[in-house]
Image (cartoon, rainbow, N blue to C red; front, side):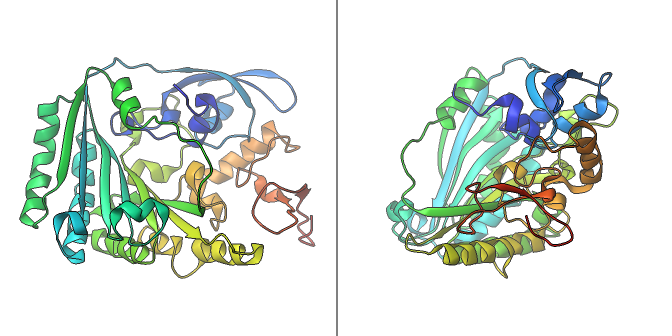
Amino acid sequence: MKSVGITGGYVQGGGHSPLGALHGMGADQVLSIQAVSADGRFLTASPTENADLFWAIRGGGGSTFAVVTSMVIKAFPDVTTSVATFEWGVTENNISTDTYWSGITSYFGRFAEFTDNGLSAQFNIYPQGTLPQMALLDGKPLISVSPFFGVDKTLEELKAATQPWLDEMMALGIKVKTSWQQFPSFYPAFYSELAHTSTGVMPYNMTYGSRLLSRRALNRSQGLNATMAAFRTLVDEGHMFNGFQLSPTLEKGSPIGSDGNAVLPAWRDALSHTIIFALWPENFTAEEQMAFRHAFATGESGLRLLRDVTPESGSYMSESDRLEPNFQQAFFGSNYPRLLEIKRKYDPLDVFYAVNAVGSERWAVKSLDGLPTENGPLCRVQADSGKG
């Protein structure tokens, strides 16, 4: 199966998946690592050898500490996997926009119940508009929850687990369009629903950012209403959401080692990793693009609305906005000081570099057009003058 490199950005960034509601993060599955250090040494990293490096590589970010050549990872018995899809919209259900959003609130309010039962999902919330990907929606809002995974669940068990929510939706006046399928094992279920390869050029310009939504933010008696109000504002502004229902707690992941691993602590309290997309016209100049992207990343709307309802949380470094303010806190949280210390120990000359990686604040790419790309020289940042 075509995939990102499991020993690279996936595990080193943390690594989420439909199995997260059962087994935690990808980084939680690593038992030992072999890597080449910046000074050319071949090292083993494990709970008993180079334990600090072992901790850092598992979730502390890629292209930072060493070149990983191999990993030993956990394996789990294969299990029956059932998959559902759920969909509703304003036009399809002949409902008001308020009722449509009541349905979305109902769904998100069940995230804790679903994930505590080992159920995971992917969702997309589409706005009104005339962009190519929205043409089939007739300009009307639509939400698709697909796939909805019941790993180690029969079809009957998955239906029983979701029926109370579907009953609640019916009481709201929303008849959810559903489909159901059972697979003998996880791989064919995953591959049939998610692992598709797309090729070609995107027909529009786009940026995106993300936020981890905590249990508090999706609790019906605490932050749910404020979170849904932020979602609705952003969708009304033309933004599209893609996200995941999950809960990769520390208990589920059980990473080996006395101090766990370097996965962003906010992941352990998250019920959703939510990505928001923003698109701009093709005829934007470089200056207009930068103004648009800065407004999305740090302005009064855009990602700020999600930060405001989840101040205790963070952002998944592997699917985030590179203009995220205070990336050290957003991507690494309380782990950052220790990660920086380990970076200095194993790579004091900054042989390894990536945008917004640990220690990257000492460097900057000087692109000719001023856009946030790698199209330019990598320069040392001078603390006294601010020049590269």
